[in-house]
Length: 346
Image 1 (cartoon, rainbow, N blue to C red):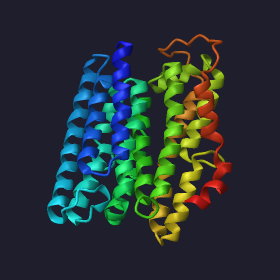
Image 2 (cartoon, rainbow, N blue to C red):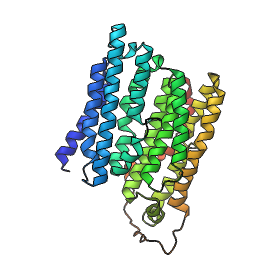
Image 3 (cartoon, rainbow, N blue to C red):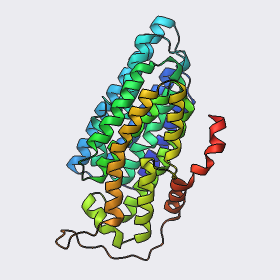
Image 4 (tube, helix red, strand yellow):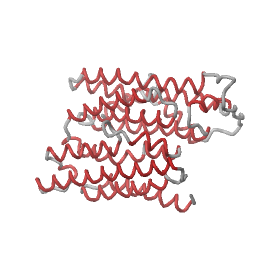
């Protein structure tokens, strides 16, 4: 893909996201989401591999359905209340349809079916965009409509997402699919707290973006897409593999790493809201995710591959680690001491 085309698609992604975040009318928000969808499609299908074309088709159909549902919910609300303002979504049926549409956009259970397949068919950098930047507009809309949404529906979706994301990631061997299920379980953590404290949802999303960006960029620099290649990548860049292990443990939410901060604050807030059973269930379900993060970390740094492996060991390169990965890795592992500064503002 030539640089001009890449620049146009990147600019369109930025434009679409900006339009959604800054709009207060449903039609402009819908237009921003459509610009985003159309801009990412060529980036998914640029390799012309049948799997990439299939991923782009699945992505297009799902996002088009979600956009149609979003438009339908806003029209139903306007019909009943005469309001097109995003923050004035008050009709219960419209709120339910809106929750379904945004859950489909994000990949929350039970609308998660498309996400692992699309991520598996995309290049690593496009996968990074799909896991992070493409989730910002729907999360911004959820943030703006948080007061109108049904807490029971969101809590149910959140617990199912955490359970299914953890459960289905257990037997995967493709790194991108593991990261897709990891994304689904993290979305569960964001959805469960949305109605009670939307700022915590945003904090969780920002820190998740930080850690996922580190992992995708590291995998991209070592050219790793499968667990079997991850086992041999430690010879190529030992320092990078060691930092990948720490970032994976941070994504799992182990203290004293950055990833523990949002989980800690969310469990604290749920307990304040007298939702201790939900907090206990979602905390226990995160142990499923911890298992496959440990498996990835084990493959990245601790396992020596068997001598009969089909993969040749990669040559050790003395290339310096890109500064972007170095900065992101430091942030992904060391932000927990900032929690006293964050807590009063939330």
